[in-house]
Length: 298
Ligand code: HMG
Ligand code: MG
Image (cartoon, rainbow, N blue to C red):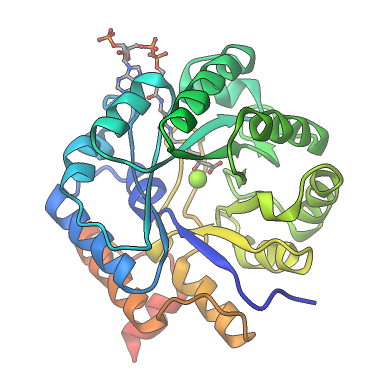
């Protein structure tokens, strides 16, 4: 039986924009984020407090989070790799962060310049300090299915890493199909393994739609009782340090599927589509979202 309601975590302003060459002016990002929240989203990942040279598109993280109008009841989260990132986020009044690492050594190194063994104590310190300051922490595991450098990733490794992160004090693990290779069968195998040790309400799925599998994978995860999904307005997204990674599940496409199936999201299709159109115009090329392209023609 499918869940009656799900939580969608919008990652467009972070995962979406991080992969764009064009720098979207801070004021336009703020406008977009404001309207995303107005469309009914309760959770928006707005930027990253990473090294600005590594992700130039998000180099305005400090100004953006300081200036962002906050709608009551909406969580505005930011990606943070270490204590330095946390310090910046705290100074800007951020109330939730997301830490991140990869299940594969090579992607972890390419992305955050550390081995997995070196990363764990950094994340432990960061999570501990965040929690001490009443900041909620979410955790991503990237390349949870496949690594563009190493190939197939064992579900057992993801299970162990998830348990380690939860034990550090994160409230939820977002399981990332970073380059979008997973099939529903692979999702089933990985989730079967994870659910042996981890309650389903501690898991979220983060699909990239590189091969058009994101919604099929989402349906499989829904059937297995997962109720939190990351997606990106317009279907923007990708990791500059994972060759081949493309857009996340498009939020509008996810809304269409859920609403057609009677699954509540609390988000307005119409308002979200307007925001997809807004960011498409600002980026200046056609975005991958199917629902957006259909809506534009009507
Ligand atoms: P590093 O060079 O190893 O850092 O980078 P370091 O600790 O050795 O410090 C070097 C310099 O960086 C120092 O400055 C630090 O102060 C500075 P210097 O003394 O030389 O002037 N520094 C920072 N500056 C600003 N903010 C910080 C920070 N930390 C250190 N937070 C680091 C390590 C992690 C910082 C770097 O590699 C980095 O920024 N990586 C970010 C990569 C990234 O954002 N990737 C994309 C997001 S992950 C993703 O997309 C996947 C996901 O969507 C899930 C999925 O799809 O699977 C989440
Ligand atoms: Mg991603």
